[in-house]
Length: 322
Image (tube, rainbow, N blue to C red; front, side):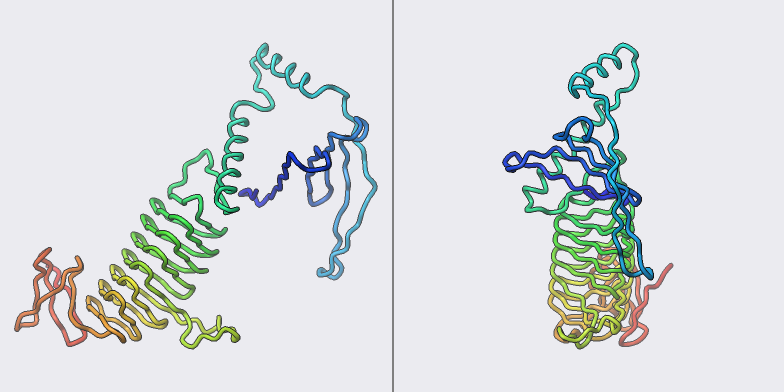
């Protein structure tokens, strides 16, 4: 169990263990406390002021100390619990453990059961305060990740440390987001997409199912090339079709449209429609995604939404804003 304050806990429970143990251990930075319910009353609770010294700041050396027994009042636990319960009813004081504590215990047990059923997958326990975004229990979000309000992260997705995801995004099943990746608002990433370190997606980018990003031009398994990652920028509103490949080091222009299965090896202009291997410009699209038809004056009006465009050159189209 990992808590938000970085405290970690390990619970081991077995009905079939050959040795009977009822032991609770708390490890601190200055000493340890051990409660062993199988020991005599004089020895049930003990402190161990062990510590670690560091030689030269690098070599850990354990320093053990004598056990310190803590005396406890000899009393049957269930009887003490019942007496405390009756006292709380009489005085209206809050019990040491109330119904809210019991509810949290049940939440932990249910989370452990879900983890068991999912083959040991990490399960997030929902807190009392509802998060402004949704993360499916099978997803893994590392520490140090920023997620915007309204974003939804679905099954088996993994987001690594340093990633920043904007508002109202949707990350489908089996998505991977690498370290320090930047994703804008309203981005939709479909199933089986990996967004590697070095890739940036601006607002309202659409990544189709199983499309591929790369971040190294000449990868080799036996050669480390993390220092050679090339930046890939996908600008606002662009669409990357299913199964397309974006070779690293390129820029995909605003509202550009990469067709399914295309392989992009160079920059794509704003509003360009590219298809093929390697990808080439075959037309132009409106911000709404519909293909444009230009007249003899190199102007076009979208038949779907009415937005107007003009062609500045063979590789440059711009919107006419009224």
